[in-house]
Length: 221
Image 1 (cartoon, rainbow, N blue to C red):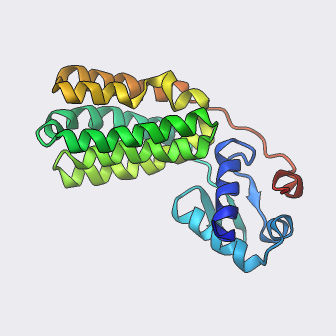
Image 2 (tube, rainbow, N blue to C red; image 1 turned 180 degrees about the vertical axis):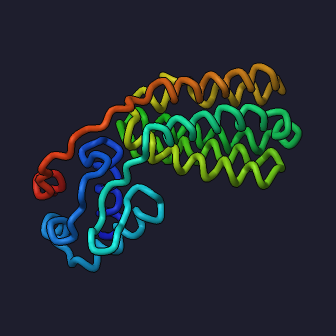
């Protein structure tokens, strides 16, 4: 793993695990000192996080952890609840053994991340599962929309989620795959709707005051 990748993973993990709360400032100089790398290296990592919407970079203000509004968080989950279950009948028209095996591998990766307490990986893997499933519907416009909603959900889960927002508390994806293998569209739709509603209900929509963060201690290696 490259040094840039290692720094990226550590900062992302800190965001997802709420050690860096929404709105927390990310000064290049202090991060550079904490990781023992140049500010150029830190800037590159922050720009990557900004592209993924976990960080916001403003001219003359620097970088800070993105802070999605409570309204945005609820609207994103409501949009997913409306759309994703409706894609189930269409994707079943394309479903086959190869798809089942591929998504079961993804579900195992999610379970491993959850069991290993790798919350950042778990959030990213569950987003990938959902948007890749949506692509099987054949509706490219809706699939693209679901992909964007999943990226925004990752940020929302990082900001407001709990360990109950991903993993078995809201239903393991293998349960959905069993229903798809059976070709049971109605039950699969109900499962998806319940799954997304559980994620929504697990959010803790409270703003936490920014604390004076000790980056040296947080990222000590």
